[in-house]
Image (cartoon, rainbow, N blue to C red; front, top):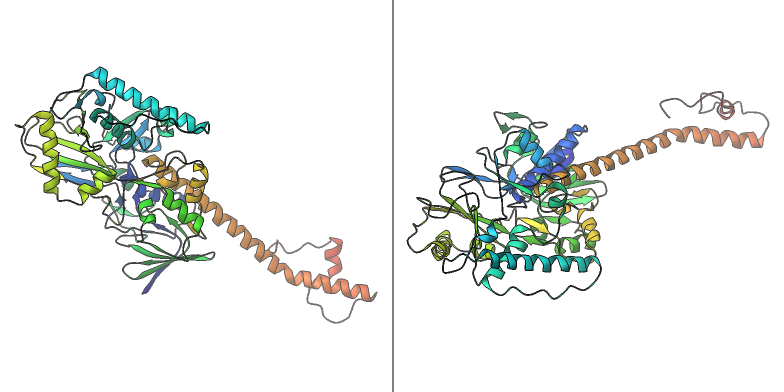
Length: 510
């Protein structure tokens, strides 16, 4: 093994963890790490090191060329715009002129197809949606009052299953007035810029990392560094990477996803305390998969109220939520279908050919047997990626969520934990990751300053010891005899002058 370097702070990860639709996990990890590094650099911590496991920055923010366009496999939306508080990610995107398109989901519930290709009447769809929302809100109110949950009607019919999927899987992890939409605003914008969502990260990184022609060329960012061991104590941290390199630091910010923390990728030595490991295991991990399909021509309805449509199947979450990309990319002939959790894992385990076959069967249910076959398919695999292991965190409905959150974000020795999963108000979102990175770096700076003050105080105390010894010896001698010994004394200035206040201690000692 090679001892590569020693730094004041190591940041593990250069991605942003979070949001695929609402929850841009792709952007989250990098954004929070870049945010954390930026705050540290602005406060004088220059000797930091960022270790990224992959060959690029971005984490679950990832663009890829598909059908001649740059599409976002992970983070896709900026959620929470137009409210009483400003969304920092939206501010940055607006400042940099990132191209976005407003997404109006309100009409999706009126574009619900059954398996025969018929659209459910708007009245039936609206009633089913209202019934599901009311039931969820009532349960939340009962929870706040400490009352047992009511007995909600279990979704059984295809339309009920589809709406339940939209509310609980696509719309948000839990149906509740979450802070993103209450505080930041209900509007959402799809990123449709050829430079990609990642452009925000690179522009932030330019503020403190050396770049050239849009590329980061800075030795403080190390790519292809998979962290496998973290040795920690109250005096420092040692990081061992898969390629045999060793990095030492006074402190470490760990911003890997909750899925990685729940896996065995990183070994902690000593093991994390029980309160920490139990908190990590309690968090739910959501898998969110956007499958892209390219067609030779458009065969689906289009227009301002037709961007999203829903497939009602008797199996919950089975190719349920669809989006045509005409609004973002006119004449692209691309459809996107969203899967989550068990359906995501199932599809990841099978071939793209089989996935394409399933998707085409669903589309032919909706639009008839004569539609053309897709000419290309793109299936992200976040669950099987050992560096991600999912898309975003979700706090379960438990009685003491606040304590769970505190345990999740609390440091262990000199390891500081950050990520969208440590955000009290915005967990799972890009802006949550960004703000978490800033909060964690500020907490670390406070700890570093506290330690500096303690060391300074200890140093002053040690420097004063000779004078204290002199004072104690002189007082002892004076108590034994009225005259001062004629032998040489360790102090150059007579003790009596210090005691009388006529001579002060040297300024350097104070």
